[in-house]
Image 1: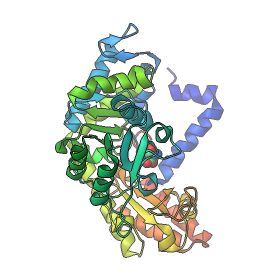
Image 2: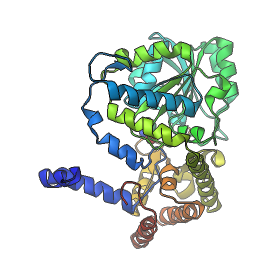
Image 3: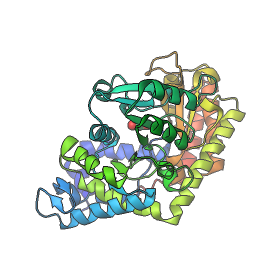
Image 4: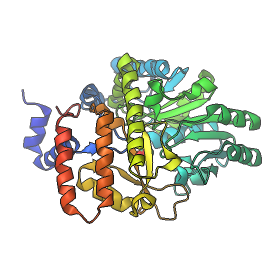
Length: 419
Ligand code: DSN
């Protein structure tokens, strides 16, 4: 029998060519965008499976369509395993991705116009944490805390002062560009003082929480934790809302029918697999190595004169100020590194004088490289290449030589699913 891949190649060579090109790009280059990863081959298998054919509006045991024996079973597996991984009472695994996941929480727990205290996008928060360009920024009254001007770290005193002044209904922490763990006890104390819900968007580092190398917000009494399933967790592109049992009905109703229609059952099957993997002892080793790699990367870059926001990392991510380190904005740095097969992303840094499409820094993350089996010595080589490329932006020949070295190294670390 011909494989699905062979069918694609002969029936739609144009699309096949894009797939083959992307496979090659992933195989030959190093992925350092902190929010990306290589998912498990088993997840790739269910994403392209017949689960994608099924409509399953509702929840296990309470669906609006027939034929749900196996979808119910797989969604229950995903929910039960997620609760075990994150030590929580309820999991909704239906959010289609990160943005609807956060929107479902706001709309389920609050009324439009209510105040939410969250991290400013320009200091590391996410679009859905109330950026004025996001619809959530129009629907709710976001008050945004920033990081401390000298260190680039979150200032618990400012969070408390803003909470006392604005009396939010929800205190939100979590980030997309911040290299430190969070003081959940301080956020919880502030929220309790003003009678607010506590929510953490742990999307970026949930894999490190699952692997026991970063703090778990539920250990500090948080009400809700949201996470995407594809970043440090290595799963399919989906989202989860994790919460206390007494909030479960409000959250579930908000996800469906409030915000979404039919869940993507192929993704939910992938989340079930991902949560099963996160419960295995090997996942703790993976999480530990992601962290060790990030620390080794940070140390090597700083030893070579690079300036990192907060001067290091406690998680999987580094934020480098390329303007201060090398006199190059983040867009130029990203493009130069792309040329040598090292993929990063341009990134605004706290109090950035430059606009988002030409910001002052880049983000670097270790989850994907660690999935390929790279360790501290590879991180040190990568840091050396990055500094070499950014110190010599006019030296195209140097980039050609470094690209060859990057490809040679990548050849020794296969991408899961592309061996
Ligand atoms: N796009 C994600 C990130 O890169 O952090 C967040 O949604």
